[in-house]
Image 1: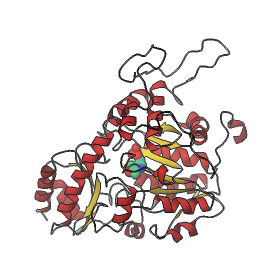
Image 2 (image 1 turned 90 degrees about the vertical axis):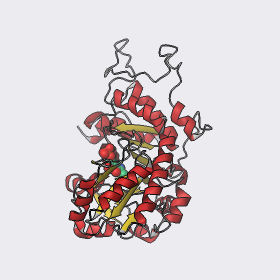
Image 3 (image 1 turned 30 degrees about the vertical axis):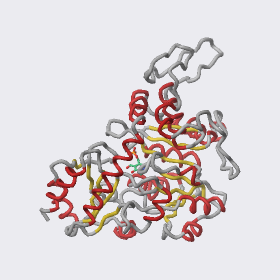
Length: 414
Ligand SMILES: Cc1ncc(COP(=O)(O)O)c(C=O)c1O
């Protein structure tokens, strides 16, 4: 069977620089209102589902009424009623036409690239990307699929982006602010560069979320989300999503997810919908707590350096102020003394929890050098700013003075 025969559900998506997202019902509502209402009205379903909350429908198959009448949804790998509400809500929040979910953020990225790139194609990005994304870019796609990745030399310099794009580039991918070093990329400017080559721009909006940053309004064509982080907010859900033109999300759904994966499961989708209701409120509190903590760390004698775009010393502070509503809940800082010093601080925390992931309502920390970015070469880590003494801190919703007291007593061990 050829690939062409496989593409029976949907035509492969082709980037169209003239595409404009169609106006959607509810576009005129404010962001906080969309976080509560988009995708679901209690009387949807002609009264069958007259419930205040979105119903969780765990059925993975949807019966045929007649032999020749295919139900829709037909099977839970590609569509369920509960995930459909989540997809509609995420699309509304990001200002995109449509959305397709995936089992994790990493899976969503994989599905996107697997759908749009072929052997010999390439993707342009930088070293300011999350660890599993880097591993897909540096090894999995080049070695197993023949898709190359160009890491731009200086992501702050637009000429670097321009120079890295060629006739086989299928996507430009930026993560901003980046995990773990909070590098901020100029979305509008990089979108203009990508579009001048007829190439779409993907923005990973996981760390800021749509509550703080609207990449599509700034020119991005596609948004990647890890739902596992701030969107679901409490490390009880693993999930991811791609938001973009419907022709793209349905290409992913029917030509990749249908064969090699699954969208998010109904209960996880439902839980995420509950968390999304408070996303705008949570992001403001995460941000104000992180600002207070960042200022404390920046003035601490045992701290060498703090990465947080809310600090006026951050190299892209002015850009972040333009591009984001506020600066988010993620920061990182460097202690002198390398891995041993980072370990001493992290093992001394009494309140802050040492765990992989971020965006949780409780403050957590992680050591990128040994946990998420361990496969980068030393040279790549130097470029990306991943120092041996770097500690990533996801600032939670506690009283900020309690977080600071814990940091203070742990840093006193150095
Ligand atoms: C910025 C960013 N995007 C995507 C992902 C992938 O998300 P998941 O953990 O849901 O696979 C991560 C994970 O750390 C991330 O930090």
